[in-house]
Image (cartoon, rainbow, N blue to C red; front, side, top):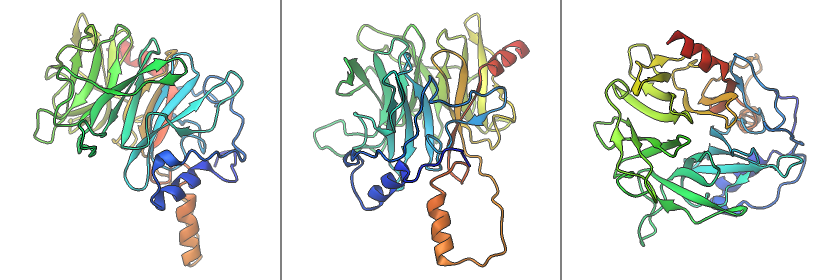
Length: 341
């Protein structure tokens, strides 16, 4: 349990509102009580070494199925996603006013439809994300994910726009990631057969050229959640069904060709269901998402309805209680893989 205790956790308020059928956009009711003072680039968290640790326990990683971990290049904003009880995904944001970080709130462009997988361009001008929001006048949510983006307009994000030029299809497009020069990598299920592959698209004047599927060195099974480094010298992605096991894989660019992907260590791939890889803008830390439940001490006390109810409510307060959490680790692990290759 974290040393930081929050008497009335904002997460419980979010859950309560959601369970009563309220729209997520209507939870802007201010929650001021006892949110901890968070300072520094990384929300005041003790920075990890070569062993992955839960990021911001009981603040960001709480037991409420959090994924993604995205800092803006100036470290004034931090974005992540939450899967709420009705299955909808919503993008959250914390902001830093120069003195301390705010409490989490729903991002200005999120909350009405299912949104996830935020990524901020290296110049800080664009925020990419995936959404199931409508694309026509019928205002009916889509069944598949599309990639959208919003432009920074002063201190605000503009009205989101859906990417064109073949980026989106009738299948899922997920997890956009960009190089420093604006090349887009993402995952798509457009090939079919319940599969997913990694695609890339060169930057065009007002968007992107038509995407190209990476070769079978990368796309050999189910591949998704691709993170591309700023210089396009390495790539990390999720893969399922490979002989070495499922989980996060890393590959390096060797004179324009990707090396055979290598499964990352057991310290990272604890369950084989690790995903959402990303590196902080300063290149110091590697973030990812994992579901690593810990065994709780079982007592001999007979269960009661009150005890069951209390345990269920508490499961949303703390990480490693059966839902996804965000982890981080020193970027030096990437250097170690590079040496091996």
